Length: 256
Ligand SMILES: Nc1ncnc2c1ncn2[C@@H]1O[C@H](COP(=O)(O)OP(=O)(O)OP(=O)(O)O)[C@@H](O)[C@H]1O
Ligand SMILES: [Mg+2]
Image 1 (cartoon, rainbow, N blue to C red):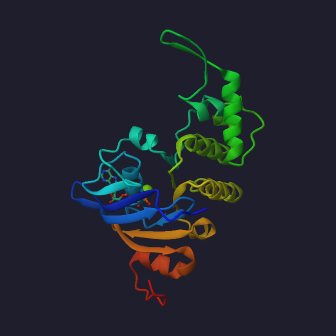
Image 2: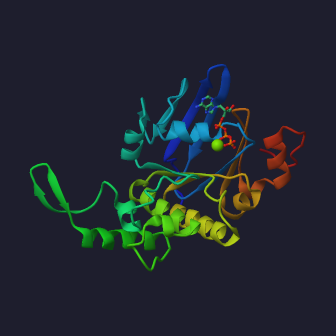
Image 3: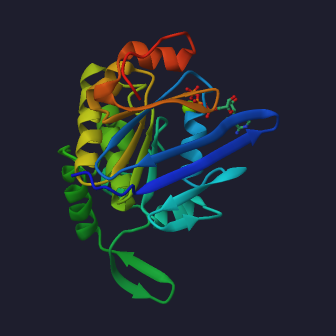
């Protein structure tokens, strides 16, 4: 599934918040079909990197490339247009709307257009949402329930299905399993894998090394805004990852 060329490249990404250096010359490549686990202690810079790649924060230095195109002045809107999406831990779903409406929000098929008014084709909208949710491997029996009454795992699936509508290049998950139980965590990690298998580059932020080693192709550890480790998961160990996250000494036996 993986191709030779990265979908997205960050080069020398640097970000200050006042006097705090949140990201320090971070250079990383994200390949189609590959899950990169991004780990690091609280405040290491993980969310900052995700927010830069999704256009929420502007870097103070560094470049973002999509193929041969450099993305400057990236905004969330432009990031979305390039097929870059983010799923946050605190899911930004509309609780009072049903699953179909959440997945299709702003992209509903239109039945009729009268001047500035649009009549949404509800039947096609539900069909399309159903297709997209089943594509991420989850079945919902009732699409008309407000999402507030769904389980954490089902809500996660709705959020991922919505992100997948656009995410043909890169999808980033910022701690998607932090609030989930064991079964839901496994279901979400399976989803993350399936999303990657569709040829999308994936970044998964998790504090849980079990999650990381279950699903990642590559592990990147950040510490104080710097990349301390960037290796295929097969050539690293938990001990090395923890040592890189914490800065405690560990001598790798394997050449880089
Ligand atoms: N909007 C902001 N304003 C000021 N400082 C910020 C802001 N966002 C992040 N920071 C600072 O930047 C550093 C990196 O934060 P970031 O949120 O990227 O860490 P993180 O690795 O995601 O941590 P966590 O695991 O706790 O979510 C921290 O020192 C944080 O206090
Ligand atoms: Mg964070």
